[in-house]
Image 1 (cartoon, rainbow, N blue to C red):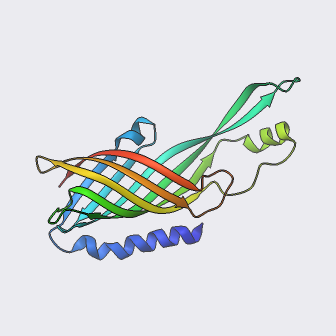
Image 2 (tube, rainbow, N blue to C red):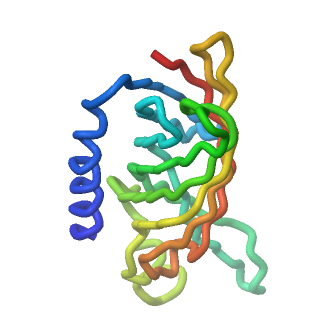
Image 3 (spheres, rainbow, N blue to C red):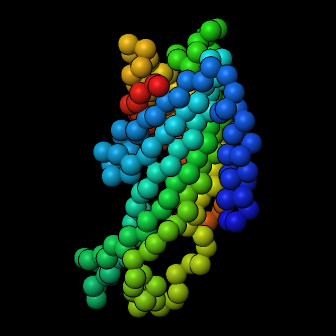
Amino acid sequence: MKNCMKTFVLSLFLFLPVLIWGQAQHELKLGILSSLDKQPRLIYEYNNGSNLGFEFHVGYFDRFLYINKADTVGIINDFEAFTQNFLALGASMKFYIEPNAKGAGAFLGVHLRNEIKVSEEKGFDETFLEVYGEAPPSEADDLFSIGAIVGYKWLIAGHWIIEPQFAYSRNLIRSVNTKEYIATITLSLGYRF
């Protein structure tokens, strides 16, 4: 996991010179669908006036673990939920398809996403052991994925942004608790400076 974080931080520093040069367009966006689902995501995109955009995002979300408790007949009649809190970091490179798009219109791209567990509700291990008679799997809950994105950005009155996006990625960390392939749909609203 430390190697994933080192790679992500190194990628950010490699993009830093790009952020400093040229007639830059800076955008700040909020992931609306994720925020309504109590998973806020803040997004920054840089475009130097060409067809390439570089996007960085940070978010926070909860994941729940459930332990089912069966009665003496074997019917599940109760369960306990335990909360895990995650920090999500990501980076994307977008190619805007239309000539002279200047960071608007249809785009294709690649993205990286890293989810790091920052806390877990106490009592999960003990309850799992009590119900199932064994310790829970010790595999990682973290996620590091790489994938493709496709979307469209509307620029309204030269500053306001509406951007739906579809991403499909593969998790590079094998685990029982995380999916191998992940598809997400996002909707962002933002402002271009």
